[in-house]
Length: 359
Image 1 (cartoon, helix red, strand yellow):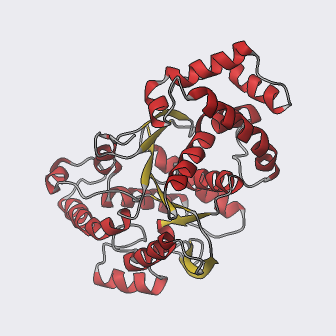
Image 2: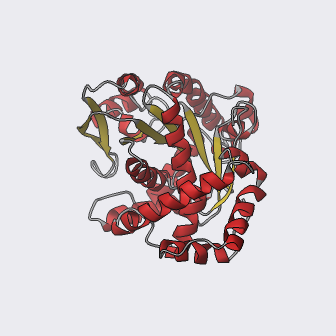
């Protein structure tokens, strides 16, 4: 995705203040939207439809911006209003409109998968999309793969069975049957109340445990996010020359076993109507991002892991399902992810494209 011309943020701020777009400014914005062919195709933008779609987006921007800014916990506090406006215009709004269109075409709740390694901003993105979709009239639920973790007691027992399962996270530490039950109930689209499992990562010194469920009714869209959502098993031969930290024979055996265990999750992924991948230009950014997230959690008064423990924790995830091995297959057409958002070290979206023939 090409870097926007400097006037875009200024124009957006001016239009929010009530001014109408000048013909020159509007023509420039339409041209920018079509200039990146991959992004335009991913959002179904054509020369025939871009004018109408952007007019709808502008109306949505005007109605949403005051609401988004009024919530101090919604938008990233580290980014300027101009930067947020451009991201809202180029990323968050078209994403929400695309998801809403998917729901409008069907006769049941729509399940959008969101995959990203630790720290990519899945939670922030889902929270913003949830707010936009609610504004569009679609009651939206955020469900994380973390909410499907087995209880602390169950994971303690699991560790006794397999001492390699030191931390939560790898395949096998989730209650897949619970996830299938919840997604099935949500997808029915009935008015019945559904119990949504929730997980508190801060208890048991950061080991976490399941907490009281959230009871919901009338959900139209489900945003199902997680670090392994949508990942598929790969050929076992790939582990013969795997990247670090998979370096020893024991590491390779663990990676193969986790790859095999991933098969149990495939029925969950079949519930997804679409899959979006947050793809950093370097998966190792995850270390830094995870440290930042933990610091923010501790700042709220909750307990968490030390920096050293976080480093080991992230590498443990890489040993289980290494991003360099499992994500690239989802970036290849015709059977890759429906949408890919490439990220730089500051979480800025640098490219958007689809990897399925249906895009």
